Length: 240
Length: 244
Image 1 (cartoon, one colour):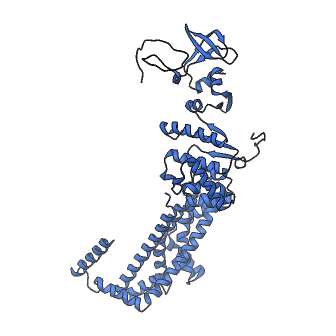
Image 2: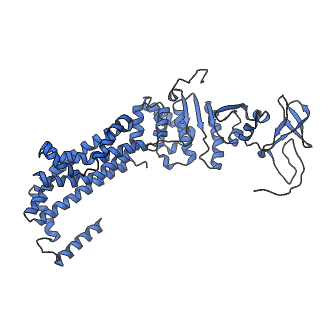
Image 3: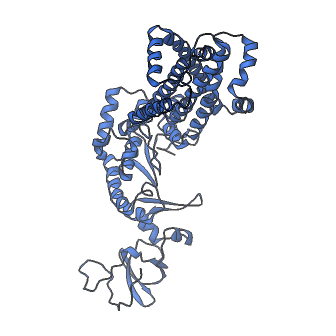
């Protein structure tokens, strides 16, 4: 990691000193760091990051809970699966930002808009990973649990869910990064507080340093989410 | 029928059978002690009592020191012991062992066969041992039900079955290759002397007509020296060749 950081800073400085781009378009690394400190000190960075983070967390939580719940229902009730699967198969391939314009008209420009988009972004992968996780849980484990007189509910909670957990968390992990991409795009278009808004605003003001800080923050947040969920995945499946 | 009670209408989980599957099927996300404790925990038995029973069973099985491990860290024989401990934890009326040695190498299988026999006797539990291996039947020395194509063909002690084979299907299943047609020369109490192509052989006799005898390959010992065992049938012969 330290080597990667060093090589990034080195390459950055080489590009700056080689004057491949005008200095106002590609600033020295230290200036970007200084801008980050200033933005952190005056509170703007935290305010905008907190707004985006709250939306991402809310959207991811709602999407994951609904995805897991419906995934369980669709795995255990064939009728529900047959009724919903064709609809979801049709809706899932639609790019997330494709929904944006429809939702602007339906619910207006407010806090619900980015949350709804992140909800959709996390819902489908978690739903289908939950279904595949439950279906891939070996039936023989269920039969043994039943032979030990475990109720259907206990078998589900003690055997099926722990065995399906890796698939479910993998779905969430993959979509955490996607959620950050979605929030930035939504905030750029329709919301006035958030990292996406800070990005688009900095473009209008020709503040390349702020844009670079925002990109760095997004990279760190995506990586942090990915690593945290990877940690949860490893902790919950340490038996593998 | 268990204990003279019909169980046809009772669901499998209500029959009180301790099931030990062929693949052992230990819950992979649980430690060994959690696996054994599971059947007790779902019955809402007190934690202290669960811990006591688990310890007791794992000690009987000789694997208590492995209790915190996961199944991936165990050998085939150890996995099987855990599966048996898990099945026994719920105090079943019957222990069902589904081909318990089929996933083990022959050496471990031989050792575990002896061990299983010892454990079953020690715990005095009715055990159904499903097997395709004649060695299991031979060494367990217990009552055998020969089932072929879903039908019960013959019931009895292994050696009784050998001495009164009902049909070729059973003898083929038991891999009984050395079956010879014979004539009875004389009957001496619980023994009979028979004639197989001029060779006089003493065989056990428990009444009834003898028309065929089985010489199990495992029962033949070839030796250069004079045999000092108490074998009844000893013959001199010329060694021609060995077969791999």
